Length: 387
Ligand code: TTP
Ligand code: MG
Image (cartoon, rainbow, N blue to C red):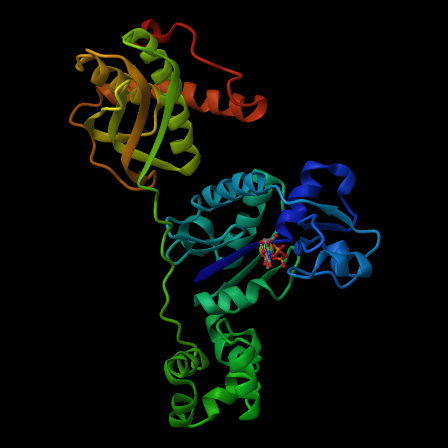
C-alpha cells in the first residue's frame, strides 16, 4: 500500500504557524507586485473563492479582508526537509514530489506500524509533532489512486481506497481527476462521451489508442487499476561542503583549522538535517595565486559526525605542506548515502564507541542551533578537545 501525503494550504499554514495573529484569518501568500499571483491561500480565504495562480488583484476583490503575505521560500523549504525526514521513520521508500507532497510505500511495514489506516494516523501525528502542521493523506494500492485520495477530504483528511474497492472507485472516477488529463485531453474525452475512467474501460481499446496514442495506453492501464510507477526513494545529494574565502591570506595551519572546525560543524549539521552520511571527506585549498588543491580520504564507515569530519579534514591538512599563502579553505563530504542504508560493521567496535559520545554532542548542538540560531553555540578549545 502507498500513502500520498500533502500538506494543507502549505505556505499559508506556515505563515499562520509563525504568526499566531494570522490563525483563523484569511491569509493569501503571494507576490506583492501588481502583476503578482497567489501562491496559495488559507482555507479561510478559499471560502471567498481565492485559489493558487489567481492574480493578486482579483484575490483582493474576492476577499477584501485577506491578509497578503509575500512568500518566504527558505522557511517553507526548512519545514519541508523536516517533514520528509519524519516520513523516513515509517519506511525507507519515501519519494518527495514537491515541497509539500510525498509518496511513502508502506508495503511490508504492517508488523511495525499496524494497518495502513493506523500507519497513516501515526504519520499525521508524527508530522504534527515535528512541525505543528496538518496534512491530508490518501492510501491506495497505487500511486495515482493514493494521490487522488489525499485530495478527497482536505484539509486534515485521511482517505483509503482498499484494494477491493479499486474497481468500483475507478468506475465512477471523473477523468479530470486523473493526473495527466489536461484541458485538451479532457475536451477530447468529453467529445467521445467519456466522463469517467469506467467509460474509458468500456470503450474499445483500439479507439482509445487511436485517439490518444501513448497516453491512451496509460489511460487504459489506469482504467483497469494498473499503475506501474513505483515509489522511488529520494535521491540523496552527491556532496555537502562549506568553504570560505579568508579576509586575509595566511599560511597558519592552526588558523585554517579553526575555520575547518566551523565548516565541519556546518557540514555535519547539514548532513544530519538531510538524513545522510558520507564516506569521503575532502579539503579544498585555494592559494593566493588561485592554484587549487584538494585532498581526500575515504573512511571505512560513512559518517555524519562533525567531530569525525573535523578530525579527518584536520589530518588531511597536517599532511599537506603549505608553502604559499592560502586564500580559501573548504571542507566537504561526498559519497553520500541515506542514514537508513545498512553499512558493514566495523571489525572492532572501538571507534564506534569513541564516537557515540560525540553523536550526543552533535544532537545537542543541533537542538541549540535550531532554537537559538546559527553561531549560538561553538566549540571552545578547538583542537585539544578533539584529541
Ligand atoms: P499545493 O499542495 O497544491 O497547495 P496547498 O498545500 O497550498 O493547499 P492544499 O494542498 O491544502 O490544497 O501546493 C503546495 C504549495 O506550493 C502551496 O502552499 C504554495 C505552492 N504553490 C504555488 O506557489 N503556486 C501554485 O500554483 C500552487 C498550486 C502551489
Ligand atoms: Mg498541499
